[in-house]
Image (cartoon, rainbow, N blue to C red; front, top):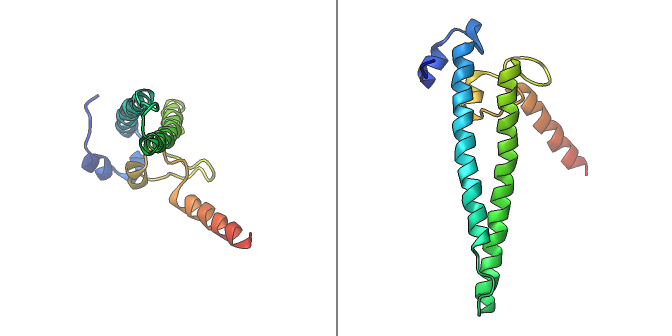
Length: 139
């Protein structure tokens, strides 16, 4: 199936939501994102593995440890995103991709273009964030 552009995707009628072309578009985008992230994770792991903590200077050793901690944090975040990407790819296979997990409403092409791993519609995500804000204010 030939790849379509974002403009073609957005130009499709609402009645065609999550048709075969759209699913193919997002599957391709998610696979590219997954590939890029896996390469970044590999680079981060190599950077950590090649760090020399036996440096003579305490300041150099502390700076290297801090850099390792930063690599670990970034790598951890990328692993979380990789799991979300895998979940989104599974949803494409089972036909639930693009629909809100809570309401079942369409998430929308614009939102999926910005965040292809989105699981909630804009309305549900806004409500969730508002509840979280209210909860944190009560604490």
